[in-house]
Image (cartoon, rainbow, N blue to C red; front, side, top):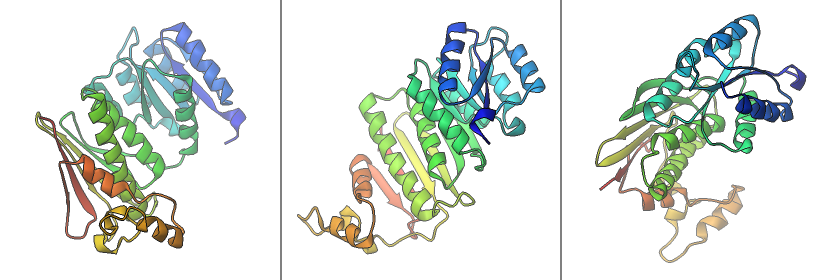
Length: 279
């Protein structure tokens, strides 16, 4: 698809927001059509083809999520939800109805630019499948791509919005590390393979369970990981990584262990459970 043919529909009853978003899209070589009601949005989407929809949920005539459920997947259209409603229920419904991304107001122009670029870069990638979308039990099947992992990380961050900032940031960092290991090493970055993710939340506990499609690994054979360094030696794994031609790193599992209250792998080490106690 050439840049000149990219088209977006902006649905927001605030004309200032529509103008602002249209300018951002124009800077990304995307032509925009704007409207302020759900009825107009459905009419326009029937009459014209749009590659991307930026959808505000607070419409005057209908809940924006009802529009999402009718627009999702129509001729390959990707829908990005933009809203001041940060409740888990709204976010989870957006995920279930195949929203490509979820942006919380207020936002910076760079956030929109990043998401717009991701939408067009991921045009033909497989979808994220929702198995359960309850606030206390969220379960997904995710293709083994970095793009999908980035999207899910952002959804997970919104799901934990009620946690203190430091705790939310640390468990999100741990989740990302475990997910990227599953996608890169277990799934080999093959979009035809999938990682299964479960997020469980109780009053006293937050739990992630991540299962990848790979054969697993033996921890003692990961000489390129920092947790296998000899006692008192912080750098042996860096030498190994250089010899193997690997990017700098190797601290991930050690970092996750420091954040987790419990970290449990199955026998093959292709499935992991992360637990953080909340009191």
